[in-house]
Length: 465
Image 1 (cartoon, rainbow, N blue to C red):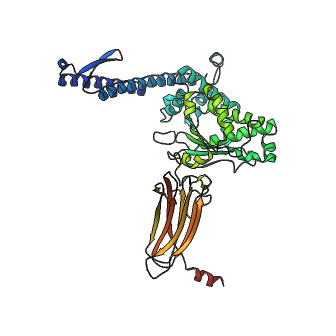
Image 2: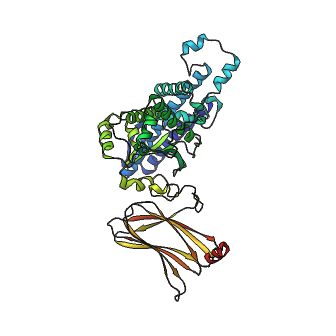
C-alpha cells in the first residue's frame, strides 16, 4: 500500500510539474499577445501556448493520457486492496459470511496467504513483482471495473479448484492428437506459440474417437487446457518479458458447421479460455479460413467485444505466410507455413538468423553466397513470401576456365515449403540464387546459409568400399 501511495504521489508531482512548465511558457511568450488558451484538467486551468495547432493537440492528448493512467492506477489500487482483504479474511474462494463463521487454524491462515495463480502469488503485500501484472489482466478484461474484475478472479480460482487444473499438466491425455495440438517455438516478442490443427478431424475414425462421446469431448477440453497451462509455464510475467501467448488455429480441412460435436467443443473451449485466462492470448490467428467461417463470424461479430475482435486475425490460404511472419520470425515459423523451421533440424537453429531480400515487380534479384576456400559444404535455406516466382540455383567458380554448375532450376513456384539445398565446394567461387518475379507485386525473400568442413565425396566413397 505504501508503494501505491508513492506511485500516486509521483504521478501527482508529474502533473504539477507539467502545470508549472505551461505557466513558465506563458510568461516567456507573453500572455498579452494572446498566443494561448486555457484548458481544464483535474479541476484546474492549464495555460497552453497556441503557437501552432499540432502543439496544442499534443498537449491535450498528453493530459488525457495522464488522466487515463491515473484512472487505471486508482482501479489497480482498489483491486489490490480487495484481493488483500479477501485473502486475509479467507473469502476469496467462498462466501464471506461462511468464512467468518468458520474458525481457522494458524496453518490454514498461512495456506490462504500462499494462494497463487499461474505461479504468481496473489497477496499484494508480499510485494512480488508479478502480482500487479496478473491483477491487471483481470482489470483489462473488464475495462477496469474493479467489482467485475474481482468476481472474474474468484470464479477463475473456484474453477481451477473444482477441475483440478493445477494437476492437469501431468495428466496423460493420449488422444492421438500430438501432431495436431502442440507448442512450437516462440513469437517475435518471446511468447510461446500454441498450434491447433483442426484438419485432423477430416479423419472420420479420429473424429469419432475424440468427439464421439461426452467423456471423450471432456478429455479433449482438458487437453486444450493442458496446452494452455504448459504455455503459461513458459511465461515470465515480468516487465519486458513474455506474459501472453500466441495461438494459431489452422482450419484447413476442418469440419464444417454442420458437425454439431465439433462446433460445440470449439465453442466451449473458447468460452473456458476467455473466462479463466483473461488477456493471456495476445493474438489468436486463424489461418486457411474457409468461406463458411467468414460468414459465420460476420453474423456473430456484432455480439463480440471490440477488444476481443482486435485480438483475432483471419487469414485466407494465400495470405497465411505473410500474416504469420508479422508475429513470428522466419527462423521460428514451420516450413509448412512458409518459414524456415524444420523439425529435428541438424543444420540450422533458431539462433541462425535469416537475411531479407526484396525483389521488385517484374524484375529479378540474386542472392550471392561467396566461398573463398575449397573443402567445405555450403548449406542454404530460402523462402519467398507468396512465391509465384521462378528460381535458379547455381555455383559459379572464380576461375573463368572452370564450368558453372546448375544445381537446380524451378519453374514457377506457386506456393509451398521453403527450399533447402547444399553443395560441396571443390574450388573458390560463389553460390548464386536467382529469383525472377514476373508479378506486379514485390516479393519478400528470407534466406540463410552456413559452411561446414567436409571430406571430398570421392574419399567418402573410397572408405565405403
